[in-house]
Each structure stands twice: as C-alpha cells, then as structure tokens.
Length: 116
Image (tube, rainbow, N blue to C red):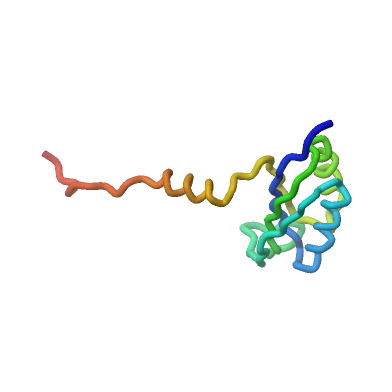
C-alpha cells in the first residue's frame, strides 16, 4: 500500500465560480487535505480557448501517487473546467522557497568598471 504524497497544482480556471467544482473534482479523485491558495484574476500572455484572462489558483493536496495519472487524464477530459493545469510532486515549503530565492541572488558588482 502506497502512502500519500504531497502535491501542488496550479490551475487556470475560466472564472472564479469554477473553484468549488475544481476542489470537488480533486477530492473525487482521491485528493485529501486540499488547501487552496489565494486565487486572482490574471491576464494571459496569449488566448487560451478564446479567453484572454483566467483565474489562477494554487492548491496543495495529498494523494496516492497511483491516482495522479487518472486525475490528469480526467482533467484533460473536462475542457469546460480548466484552461490549463500543472501538478508537481513534493512542493517545497514556503520557507525553503524564500531561502532558495535569497541564495540565488547575485551579489552586487563592486569596483568602478574601469580598465587597467
């Protein structure tokens, strides 16, 4: 028996009204402890299904890894529910994101930039 793994999903919904349906969809496919982040309306870089704006929502949930392929397949078969989605396993904690971002910044250049 496999243990539950943490996942993060980023979903582009046509509108905020479909958020409840998306959460119910995840739970129907075995997702537990679904936590929805703060969603917001965003402009799209290019139209998706004739939409120029979308409601972006990040969510974290736990699920059996064997359930993920079926979940992804069924999301694709629900074109009226999502514009796009991406599921990643073992999302980093917010603290590790902050540390990674801070450590990846390049130090400020020193010197006058003049030649010898």
